[in-house]
Length: 357
Image (spheres, one colour):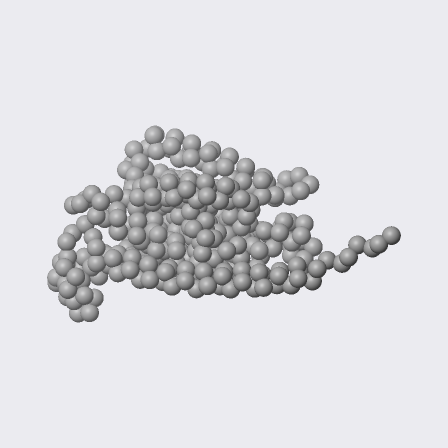
């Protein structure tokens, strides 16, 4: 009886060049994508300083930046209004972009964003309580309530989902986060219906806005956001292990429970700080990681590196549109992000057909 002939060496020989070609193609796509992102980020930053609801000539904008005159109203508008607002947009956008990527990675849920841990609604309810019970006034005081509320909401979600033999699985985290977010949203609405003063104070903050966000709002939150951004950027290896599944990650030496807790704290710090500065802006953390995967692939080290500048550029671009779309007034950036982000996200979902992360 004749033995079957061994497989042709040409088959396996073709695999190596194909894999090498795929790696080269991915590296080229990342390089081109990085160049595009940098150019877009520079352009939208310039537009954020140069464009507003009031018409100021480009040469006046340049003069205001180079030779600031505190007695010139146009210089004041550029240096004291537009520049801090643009910096706030860059910081908040980067924070939400990374928070969304971490949330999707730790839950292995392509629809996850910071709201999946109840952070946004927890922050909103805490700010409402701060206004109605403790008399909080202004964004600086809102910030501390937002952090505490976001952290408490995340702790509740973690405690609820940790019950049972399997612990805090991605599915249980998602369900607990969605349930808590719905309950907190109902409480916020109930308080706002009863207390008109809270409704007036939160009317614009709750939609999400960058108008009036100056250095007095940014500086208190800046240290925590910077540390959280660095921690988020360094969490790529952990998220790559989560993508393999909890059992595989544990087999490779990762302490799954502790790693998931650290990732949740990063999301709380980023989303809570961003919410305190600009209000609960939706869709940035949801859409940005999906857009980034088209450029960076599935490696979370690259996804996180791209998510920060893409999120920053997305939010500042939306804010520029918010300033000019209803001149001489302006709409809230949260409205523009929702209008732009919803159809983009639907298109991405249709294209990816909800492939698991």
